Length: 106
Length: 114
Image (tube, each protein chain N blue to C red):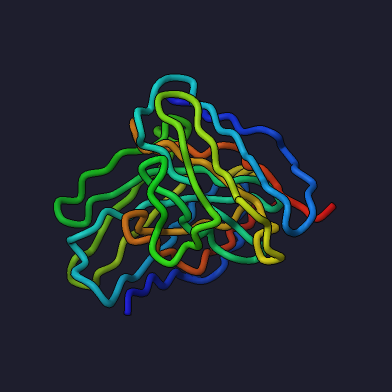
């Protein structure tokens, strides 16, 4: 089973700042990596699939990069609505979520 | 429009089983695999398994292999997730989802308590 880890667990930033979230897989997942955003009381929302492809309607300030075992989600300039929990998910061998990174307001 | 509508909240005793339903509409039911994901209160997302509504084939996360069953009824466009031998740690919101289209059900709270 592929294990996903994310760092940091919490990221405290101010609106307008750049957020860099990391995700690592225990073995290569090629580019079969997705990123989700979840806000309290809501279902997750897909941001990125295929490691770097923005989902429909996702703003350009969200970008994904990486392949193999190391991946990054970057939010170029945080908007107030971006403060949430972010999960990576591997789709290479079945599916596994990472533990999440909470982006909160500094 | 695509909708996944789940059954209502359940309260179960330890050792019992629960069966949650997910009724799909707004698309061809057999076209997309349906996943089940759970989330304990205040915790992260946990992928449980997947069912192909076309043929009924399933794959489960290793953690749940021995106590989960996913089935489907093509006549009603409904998938089911049954989890047995419930324990308190199974208290969570359970979601069905179509990952390819990013559609999710509203979630079903299952509470396991004596």
